[in-house]
Image (tube, rainbow, N blue to C red; front, top):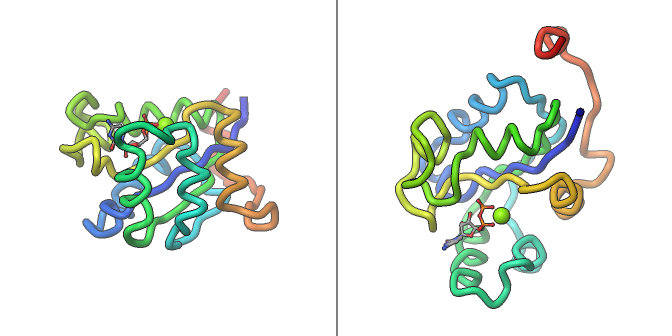
Amino acid sequence: MMERTLVIVKPDGVQRALVGEIIKRFEARGLRIAGMKLMRIPRETAERHYAEHKGKSFYESTVAYITSAPVVVMCLEGPDAVAAVRATMGATNPLSAPPGSIRGDLGLSIARNLVHGADKPETAVRELALYFTADELISYERSGDKWLTE
Ligand code: CDP
Ligand code: MG
């Protein structure tokens, strides 16, 4: 099932010069980049993004973290892209994320976990609309795409 999902390389990923390392893992897995930009997330967008966590102990620090420095936001596309991205990222707490996953290989702390990926297809639709206009997302075929599925 073809899906689009939202991925963010968080400020620590950009500051630690891990943007290429993180994108490489999604790209090598077969996901296709349908949109991408470097941006500083406005506070209001971050509040809408993390609205489900409002009132929780980590809400304020998480909004402060994601808005603290530039991020790279991406729309990734592919079969079951939401689940593929979540598995490639690993668990929210890097200490519980398996080696081989982005957080398990590159992170140590839940509060600096390098990457965001939408958790469900409905969330992906909502989050993509927070960061991209329709004309910023491009549909195209790569010559290798036919080798990714039967
Ligand atoms: O990002 P993910 O969907 O895996 O986890 P979440 O439960 O939706 O939490 C969103 C983000 O809040 C996490 O990625 C962390 O950056 C932050 N967080 C935190 O700092 N401390 C926690 N105990 C839980 C989440
Ligand atoms: Mg989440």
